[in-house]
Image (cartoon, rainbow, N blue to C red; front, side):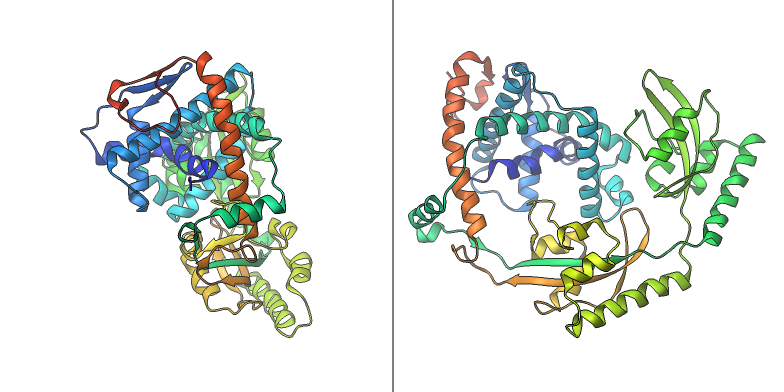
Length: 456
């Protein structure tokens, strides 16, 4: 059974620029170079080595290093062929699409690392540097995904095909499904009072006065800004264009005319800012900022908790269903999804135990104590932007480890069926495109047992 193509490359290619840095730290003897060209798109040795290290670190390598690296190259050649054909077909992705996907990836990376600072520490790069390295990789991946979707867009499965596929699987090859959780949450965000807001406004006014008297904006950003990632760079955010930032932040930034000019105080959902123009370059702009976030008063924090205490009581006494409570009380966008938490790795609402721990170790210990249908007591949590909020967690479902079956895992088996059908169509497509595509592979990989005839 082949590893699902899309998931495999979402994990590997999205991390590849980061893994290049990791590869350099752990394998200083590796000399980079081009190992293959498809159309005009290159596969580097560092692409293969980095992905190999990632797989090894996850403990999912099966076979000798040479065999695994051949498998990685096989997959990369397919991705480069998709990319080449996307370029031939003039498929486009916009800068805003790339930025949105990059932000989603960064949030996931930060959640895995634990904090922005830990992510920077691990890769020994600033968030800005990581984002800049990710940009081209994400654009390429989005192009390949669109080309693959174009090739497979008409493929569907029927219930009879799913059943037939399942019956043909050798019993020993039926996937083992680990214990899984399906969880929901209700979030109550404490109100930030005007008094707390005024405290940070006054601080920022003081900073503006100091800058007017000659203090360096960058120095104040390092010392006081609560945007930890940019503070290390003296508050500098790097070049961006309209549509990249919070609307209020962006509007204030583009009003600045001359380098060194400082904005009025700007409020966004992240907090309060002052902004200094560094430079303009066409439609792009580079600024520094200082961010301060108002602290929630204990009174308002307690009010948020008390509000959720009441919700827990209503749900536990069967006076209110969780689904209804989400719509009525939650302050989180997940309310539009019934309050269910989405697994960013699989795109589903199911988490294996280790995935739940990676989401937040505290969440696993909370949810693991619940029975199906129960809700937790309110717990105080911090968002990835450092804001405090109270949450209650709901255990909608929990499964035990088992072999996949049609009754409990139909969606998973249906996806396996669909993947098999897609593989057949894609193999036909590859055979059609190979004769007209320039492909060159380094001789050191001629002994690889590729799934397709890349070497002609």
